[in-house]
Length: 139
Image (tube, rainbow, N blue to C red):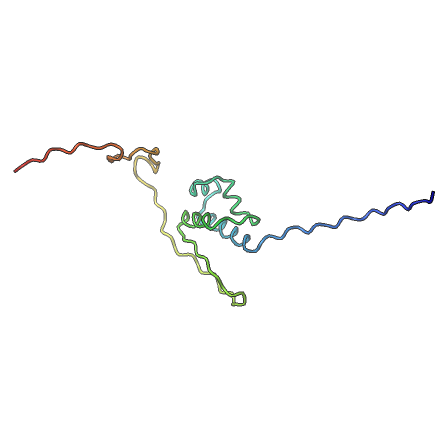
């Protein structure tokens, strides 16, 4: 029986780290910048958006590209509107526009301190219960 050569181990091909999508990176940076500009923590921002902190983190992750609907919700929560533009690829890049100045947020002086009424409950109006109309007086 002829002697067989021992196989030479082949070094595995190193996998290239996945490059983040430039669009997803730009969106994630913009979402994070809006939150930081508003001076909010992830938890407070998630509360304002009506979503979980995990979902907010995902929106700020450059590996994830949120839907336009989610981005519109984010923009509205911070007092902005979402705008999508198509530009020619060979167009010169222009300087980013500065965001408009926003009025300072003032605290409510109401006794409820900004708490919302329970779902289905009126805040004091006649919503949910009808009042009988008083008989009209004749003059």
